[in-house]
Image (cartoon, rainbow, N blue to C red; front, side):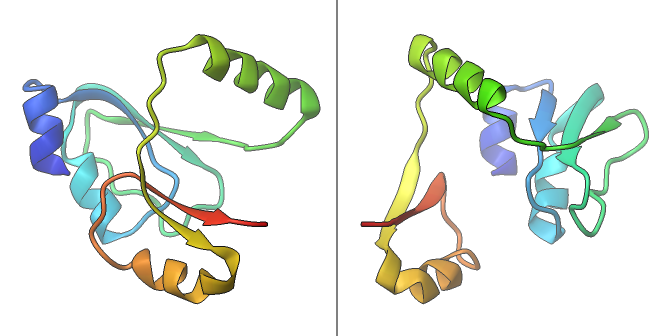
Length: 113
């Protein structure tokens, strides 16, 4: 991921959103340039390791119908391309959880039917 980020933004990423923490996230955060920002929800443990010169911004992820509606409007109107690496049926939730420990690019999804 670090190599892909550096290829995409040779001078480093200006911002990153961290939704989980740990060793892999900390390696990825080395691609954020000086003066960049990292956003992370309150409660992510352990704290992301950002180096001096990179700002760590914490936020609360409180949900509301208005916020969800606004997000859906933005997604519908924007050029978003979400890559789903693998989709698992709900009865294979254990396999999906194991897949979190592997290397993948994109999101893992559970299909609830």
